[in-house]
Length: 300
Image (cartoon, rainbow, N blue to C red; front, side, top):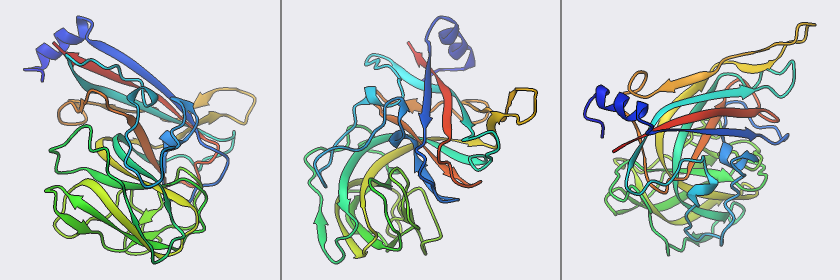
């Protein structure tokens, strides 16, 4: 870690700095207002991540397929800043404004859980284990739709918690019908959406998933992903063209600067698969584009 701000400035001006750009285009299928969406699932730059692997078997993601942060095995890399802009679906669209974004490290995923197997115990195969953050007490689970759902289902997840003790979640509700890429989990009821799965009382994190039991059918398939949240951002306006004769783009470019707006500099672990999730609080984010860049620095 940098000893002080002078050391940081010295490293950055000395060339220990890089820039990663991204541009993700959401499909035309509508998402639900207030629901979270996994932008790694959208095509663009980087390429879409469809969680394609053996069903219910733990798998890791290739870091080169996520946001393009280089592998520097002999250096420690940190997030310097994160800029995000949401481009509107049309010249009059406003539904993709006011998004809460999170940058995550995707650690381990369990694809193709059957959301229509009510009453069946679906056991996960844990050949692979956490590749990073093996002693972290605050890893979370998110549930990503892999095919269209009709909603209204519920399920529980049995997992090992931050101390390696087996626990089972409270009942997890599924939000209304969702397209692939949407986060389907909710707490308390189907209208109470949340990015991460509610854990058993007293738990702070997850180390592996052991099984899933559907209490009621929800339609479709979903993937459970263990993630490390890194930083938050907020896009308050959409960027679009004016409808008058003067052609000019406008909107909000949301910037998070580590060490100024956030305490400290989040570390980007070697081999990290970085992705973004967002909550469309203004309406559907269908056909919109999320674009921006990440600045990273490293210490000698």
